[in-house]
Image 1 (cartoon, rainbow over the protein chains, first blue to last red):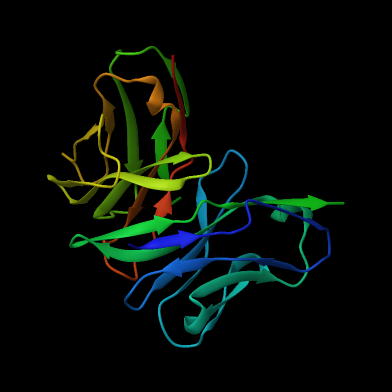
Image 2 (spheres, helix red, strand yellow; image 1 turned 90 degrees about the horizontal axis):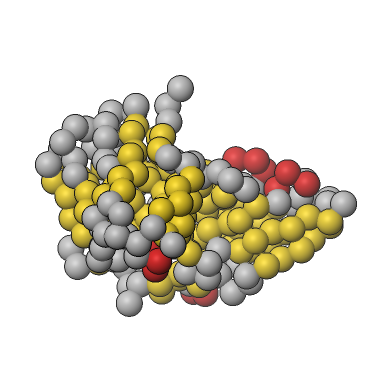
Length: 115
Length: 114
């Protein structure tokens, strides 16, 4: 079955430090992958997406993600985090389930930034 | 401003009292969808609509109804809410339901059913 796993429920990093949020997916066909961010009290905002081509994808707010087919991963990275990056991050895969196209989300990773 | 709006943003109700959460988008999107978000479960799709008068069940449709009489509106109806429907609800829209379409999310509606 199609699924998305975010192994880390909660991550804390210091401001200015680098960040990597992990995402693993299970899907038989070519995956279409997304990262969304949810700031407190807000809806989800798309950070970046991967459909094909270059496996390193650049997104908004200085984020990037790398698609690794051999590892079934789509990890999100940022070289230097800012306090405003504190939020919940969701990885998602676009999958065809029973003839319909669905967006399947991971459980989310909460990012806390230490000053 | 292009946006998806939801009302109300917060709602406390009692078991069995019918309620409707409205969703509206101003981007002329064909595809609209409802999700619920619960701790540790991420977002799960409740219902979606490919276009006016075309709706279908998502992963967790039990206890919910939807309608799509106009392109811009996609209300979520709880005919007889129960405490297990206490959740955070998001409406989303996109130009189509295709692979490359990005979904735009509303701000969310936090529902508490007593």
